[in-house]
View 1: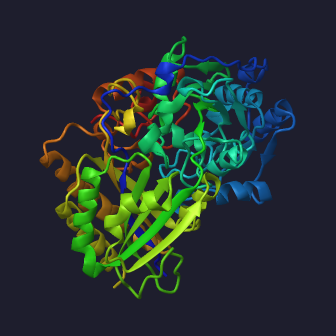
View 2: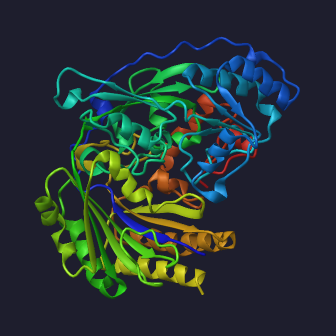
Length: 535
């Protein structure tokens, strides 16, 4: 069985960002960190992996080390969303405190030469680039998942609560903690996605149209450096470069973030969701309506996504029925707060001539289940996207044609809440954008190379040409959706990437954080580990 392919076109921002300002530009906040524990692990010579891990176990105390064939080990491997990225390490370690992460980093600084591959740091295990997996050791942060609400006495814009979110928290952990508190946060759109990786790659949330991307709402981070030192970084202290690097470049490995401090927002209350579907025969009409909507809508409480579907009829888990081998267009239309009347006013053009319409209401806690059903574990998959500043009916027709070709060959601006320049964050996102996201999953591993080739040579090539041909300002791709073949300049830009290289060299001079995307620092190049450069 080959199952479920979607293509998304997702609106990120709809209002101009001329007066944009990030939360951290308004709020200079400092929070305490634990003292760095003293150990002798960084000065010990180990002669074998077993000897080293035994000493580590003694130093960690109650932290668990799990081995192959053990239940906890297996649960970590199973949490890796993309099947082709799964690895089977020598051990999985589960720290429960920031101090234990410090002990781990002191150990790693000394014992790293015993392993050919670098240790991996795992949050939710959702990212496709492989940074959370390693055949050596995985440090699974899932037990560092607490959410604390740091409230303020007043309720004006500058006094919203700050959330302290553990580096191993998944979205569902935070939504559950905030339920019935009156607060919400800019988090991932499915429960099993790790908050850490989501924030480090930018963070497009359900309410990004109103409040901007998630990492523009950070005010500080607690970080364990590769030598074990525990520090607090914000834009105003001596670790401001470290904070900057995590605003879209955090995957390159500068330390282990054990706590994020991010501004909360008032809970919007009910979320109105419409699932609207059309058959392929109405594609031209849908594409015209969609292009017009993107051009004219100015409502920051609306969050739509247009999807192209193809489903195996023996494994239907869509939100609306899909006929045998039929290409289907579907709009997931979300409206935060307000009423059904306001939803209808905003998305009314899409309701005409639809083949299927389903209305539901959710809270933020339950909303993440809306999309989760369409993203099961246990499949090979693509989850790669590219940004662009415009869309036209012809654009949709072209991407839909590439999508159909791929499937047929398998089956015989931020509403004023953002940076004021592209240099202020590691990921340049001054210009608001659409994203065309390829999200596919398949059970036959022989299909994998074909899917990569089609996405790289057909879809990405078309999208790159489309953007260069419309004469719009430079646009940069969303880091959480980049592919192995994405171009570095098109994600971080030349100047920002050069700055990231300098920060990586400063905080990880031996290139010990070397899983997933590894930038071309001198140490990483000398070790033959680099896979990301400006060339």
